[in-house]
Length: 289
Image (cartoon, rainbow, N blue to C red; front, top):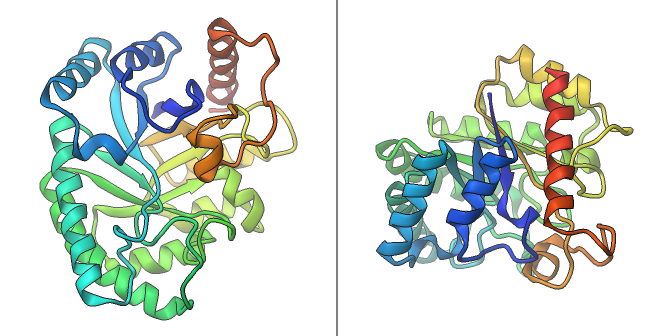
């Protein structure tokens, strides 16, 4: 089992230019991986790529990619020319992640994130996404990348709101590199049983996100942590559990999908506080295994 931490825990923005430093910080806090947003990966200069790869090797840290797609990248769009262009861009992204040494991409990577401005035809969207993902899966296999479709709440997508819906699409695609990302925050809103969601995803579960009901780091509370962990163990899950706390206001995390509208940290919270908090959270989850 690997444990990862999302870059956005330490930053108010989804993306940055200090990834090598954050890779080292992730290791010092006990994490095996750092998860970064996909946006800049297609245009990163080679010097930055080399620094990131070197930092991962020096600290024995894996790089994970995540994030949501916009209209341009929407693999479920009805327009065939647009869909095919989105497939081609997905292939270029996979090649870019190969240069970074990443083997895991998770997010709203089947449709468009937080876009509800077009008529909704869920059945057609599934058909188009499946057609696209079959081709994307073949490219992902060439680079040993697991393309994990994120199950999110109804306020962020109309397509995959439950593990059952994600399993349906994964089975339609039927490719070993097209898998599922479950996130306990989204599941808390949409699922009847968080542990059963894990069992439904089963062998197609490629990534798991953890955070509390208000997107703070995992901690004791009313979420059924032990039941979820027991379900992960029951399906022999051995990939990555990545922590995705969204706790900072005033940046792209708050304004572009994260919706952080109040202070989630003490006024005097500094880097030392953040590191201590996330290490305690990691110890809590590891203790459940």
